Length: 186
Image 1 (cartoon, one colour):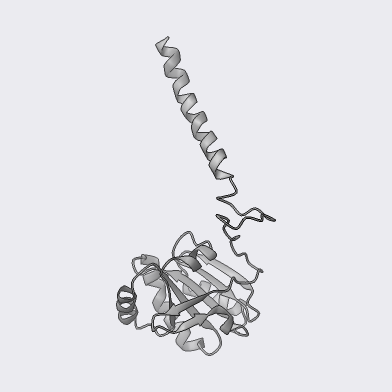
Image 2 (cartoon, one colour; image 1 turned 45 degrees about the horizontal axis):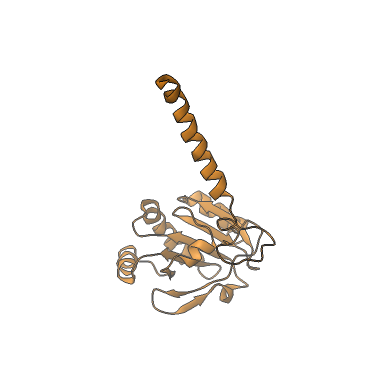
């Protein structure tokens, strides 16, 4: 009898685990169901390439309110990052150099998530960054864009449509390719 119990018990545990995943993984409180009338617990659909970029307003590191809508009419790069993120640290000087070269033709918005102004200011000073640093203290914009890791970078065209989504650290050749695709570099 004990051998049968040893064989059946793991199967029961696996079955319970699968049942929990099915029960909670597909409940409307955890996913966005098209046409759902309930707003409580419904998350926005992750923005896709060729869809409009979700609008937001955040405070910059200097305290100025910055709204995504104020950049309509010019290409835009939104980079989600954190000071503790190694790949973010490595790509920031690259972004700064392209901001210096092409800053009149496209805008960089670097969205820091969940860190203090003091931490971010120390990082910005150390890296000598002068593009806009936005503070997403509560992670609301991070949730809106469904960010799952840092760095994550969106490129928008002048109409506010997402044209490129890059996950992970960006190389210079990748950045050049994206800027060529947006018509910034010819």
